[in-house]
Length: 226
Image (cartoon, rainbow, N blue to C red; front, side, top):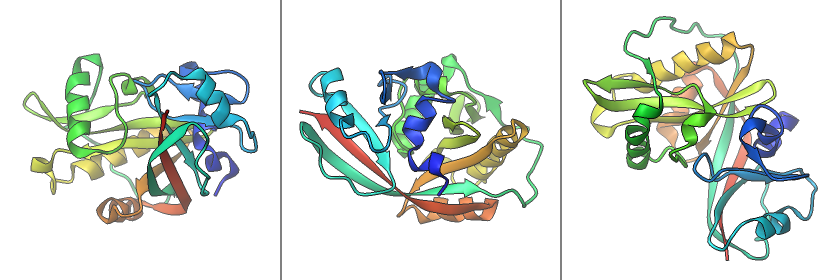
């Protein structure tokens, strides 16, 4: 695993996503409506203590790490999602024409949030669109599939929020949206990466067919300040 991607949240918050970053020193986080992710420099032992002092009771965060961590004092561990990190290795030829894919903007936020609630690709709030590069597919006026970007870690860009309405699966929408995003990221001289639950075999098969390879494990710790 590339050293930058061993601590992807913190490294995004001090590089490509620093315009969305809050916090001081070794501890950084996003606005909760953008993303519940929070992070700190590897080896900084006061990270969770500092976050505890920053947030009010009940604040939820997600901490991402490729290793197991002990439960930090003052934080309730609600869920440990075991995932995989994939990095794209260029090689396969990508489509270049996507007539049914359109950019999404603030007017689409309500539908984006509803689609994310239905399909559960990961945390998605009313401000998540600020990560940029969100695109979707509509059936008349109904948003039925989308994807976008999330963490921007120096020369790495994460694909995220890959979701298709259950009534529209099997039409190749996710594959088209992924290829569309790959084209955008590669044209910006960035290397695509993504995260996926270990048990999401269907998505993993799609990613591997497109040219993604496993970089390593990534654990997502969903925690709430007590």
